[in-house]
Structure formats: structure tokens, C-alpha cells
Image (tube, rainbow, N blue to C red; front, side):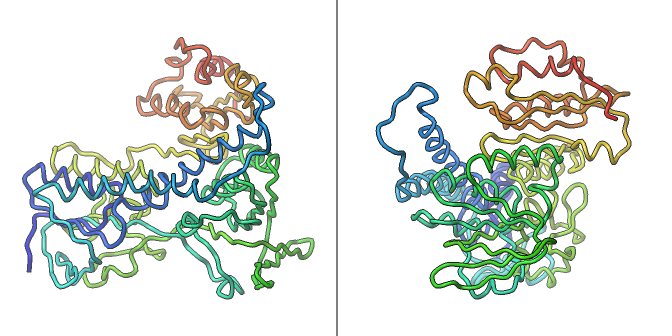
Amino acid sequence: MKAFDAIIIGTGQSGPSLAHRLAGAGMRVAIIERYRFGGTCVNTGCTPTKTLVASAYVAHVARRAGEYGVKIDGPVSIDMKKVKERKDYVLGFSTRGVERGLRSNPSITVYHDHGRFVGPHDVRVGDDTLTAPRIFINVGGRASVPDIPGLKDVVYLTNSSLLDIDVLPPHLLVVGGSYVGLEFAQIFRRFGSKVTIIEMAPRLIHREDEDVSAAIGEILKGEGIELRLGVHGMRFAKRNNDIAVTLDFDTGKDEVVGTHLLMAVGRRPNTDDLGLEEAGIATDKKGFIQVDDQLRTNVPGVWAIGDCNGRGAFTHTSYNDFEIVAANLLDNDPRLVSDRIMAYNLYIDPPLGRAGMTEADVRRSGKPALMAKMAMEDVNRAFEKGETQGFMKILVDRDSKQFLGASILGVGGDEVIHVILDQMYAKAPYGVLRRAVNIHPTVSELLPTMLGNLKPLE
């Protein structure tokens, strides 16, 4: 039995930061990683996918060069091996940095193996059993693959395995019309693949407002991506070297044949092989570890942070989990999960920035509200850049004058959203931003103008 002050299982976004913070507080820390250091974000999430988004954006702009008066001789082509090499370089730089930082800290012991609970405060790793009064579970998640007829008979990809290919799929079928599926769909369409998105809901990213879904659908269709929405059921089958999927609709059946298949229908936590039952740690029916507002499990001295607790599923929320735990444990600074405002981006091009409530959320709440909306084609900065797709929408509480939420779909939307988000954290009335003198020419400069045109949400 090897005793530590703290054990961290997993090196995703929150784990290494917490390890260094605990070590800095004088604790002896063991951190366990069974696969790649850095977790989802570094290896199969933000870092590699946004690297691919960048390559796809360059290809897209190059094809439009003539619109800007730039002449490119010959067609734009993609070298997928070079694209993958660049992605691997950026990814490797990040994951090596995480591992190097952990191994260089004398107060941290790194175990590169699978950890499994054998008791409430005991973890088996290889031939060793570790024990500590504080254990932090940070095991992340992976792609969820549903049981669909015929799926086991064909070769399919997930968000992880798709990153490993160095050839261009002639025709990529994407099952799932939400955040992961849409990003990959646009990436590979811009690389030159034919792409078909298959979604069971009647519209894309159905968690968003209908106008946002419709605008994103038009953006993707405008780039030649085919949409099959409102699918009631599907069946897969081999078709020589291809993959055929039969789709059931209200109006009948359809068949689509592709060369590659991406399953992008959700995520599941990596909690099924941790021995949680040996520790008595409670999970919900989907396998997410149940935690309170300070990320404590039902077992004293055990916390769950990051994607495995079902309280965020984003890199920034995972890092905030670290901040919450560290503040409560070390700083006598009570912080709660419920203090944070839900915010995220969809990294298609143009991106969607989201913060707080949607229009549909506000309507369901019954809150008296005001709303302003502006087409991106009316924004000088977007017009100058030749990127006028999308719109901005802001919602405020009629009585408190505070922001309720915003959707920024358009050029720079992934950064502009923070103007609203920061006002929300400050609990500032919208008049503060209304009186701001923002810099011209930017997208953000139109936010004060929009707030001068708020109308009652009817």
C-alpha cells in the first residue's frame, strides 16, 4: 500500500492543474493516466479539431480568392497527409507538455496505467495499490455509439478515429446533426469530400433556437452539404466497398451510399471500468458520477471533476471544476457549480457563440423580456471581410435590465460572445454596454447599437 495525500485519476483539463495546485500546497500527489496525457481536449477534441478547422478555412478562402481580387492559378487541392501531420504536431506539442509538466514536479508521482477502485479510498494501478484521504475522478468521456441495425456489420468512425485518417473520404456520411457532427461535416466538405448529414430531429442542433438552426442549415447547404432530417429509423449494410444506409421518413424510405461513416450522436462517461461499485460511488442511469454543488460525490473525500460528472462537458467547464475544488479546499473561498453561466461555441465557419438562455428558454420561463436582432450583413466589419452569413440576437430581462442570453452566429461570434458573457457575470444592467464606445470597425461595436433597438419579446 502506497500512501499519498491525494490521488487524481485522469489527466484531462482539470486534473493536471489540480495536481500542481495540491502539490504547491505541500501535498504528495499521485496522478494516473492510462492512455494519452491531456484528455479529450488535447487529443481528440478542441486542439486537433480546431487545427483541422483552420486548414479547412484556408482551403475555403483560397477557393474564393477571386472574389477578393486575388488570382490563384489552378484548382485548390488538399494534401491530407500534410493536414494530418500539422494536426499531429500541434496535438503532440500539447500532450507532451502536459506529461512533461507533471513528471517534472517532485511532489507528483505519475502512473501510466489503468486505475481502478478497490475501496472507498484505495485505487489499484498495475501491481500497486494506492491510498489517499482525497481522491479526484477526472476520467472524461468518449463517443456514444447506439445499437442501430446493421451498424456492427460496417466499419464506422468516431470523433477520435476520424482524426487518424490521412486520406480524403470520397463521401462521408455523418450520423448526428449536432455540434461534433456539424464541425466535421464542414471540415471534410471544404477538404473536398461529398458529405451527407443524417439527423433524427426535424432540424439541426435542435437545442438551439429555430432561427439559429435554420441559418446554420442554409450555411451548410450553401457549401454543398446534403441534409437528411427527421429520420425515424435507419439500417446499415455493406455495399461492395461502400456503406449503404436505409432511412425511414414519414413520407417513405430513402437510401444513401457513402464510403465512410462518422457516428456523432453524443458522448458517454468513461466510468464503466473504474470499480466505482467497490467504492460505493453513485452514478446516474447514464453512468455520470453524481456530485453536489461543490463537486463532491456521495463518498466523503471523493470528488468527480470534468466531463465524467455530467455538469459541463466542455474544456472551460472542466477547468472551472478545478477552480471550484481548489478554492473550496485550499482558499476558504466557497465556489459553486451553479455560479457559472452556460456558454459555448460551435466552431463551424462562421462560428456560433452562445451564452445563457436561448429565446426558447426565455419564452418557456415566462420572464418578461426584451430582444434585439441584427443580420450580420448589416455589420460593416463582416461586409468588408466578405463574410456576411448569420445574425446576432440578444435577450435581456425587462425588469432587472440584466442580460439573459445571446446567440452570435457570424464572423468573430466565438469571441464577440464574451462581451455579453462578461456583462452577465458582472450582473450589469444592459445600459452599461449600451453606453460603451466600442472600436470601429469591429463586430462588437454594433452591440451597443442593438441594445438601443430592444423590443418586447411577444
